[in-house]
Length: 144
Image (cartoon, rainbow, N blue to C red; front, side):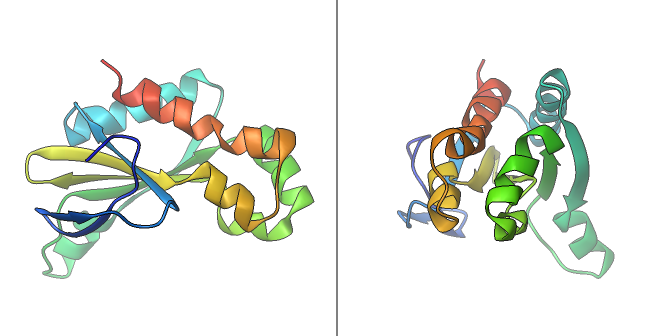
């Protein structure tokens, strides 16, 4: 799978192209290192991690098995406020959300495609550009 393409995952080895609403990139790092790097990049850019939701941990608590899957919610009011002011329903997609998940021995990072989010709320110009910042954040996390 190309690191720039969307992916719909049906199982560990079954991948097919989906619409362009989600970006999935392969991380060369472990789950723990990818999460640590994401937190460090977010902090270095003056943003805040608001929550980490451990889907797999919660599944284990009720006796269910789920691949290691964690949702990280992060952002900055300086970036999100103008977007939500222009399009109040954009608050459904903000702050930024990234899911870090394992498939066998590989770690992936997936997030809503910025262009799809901008299109959904009719955003362009600086507002759309602000949403696209997540691409650089994820690149900084997964680059060697």
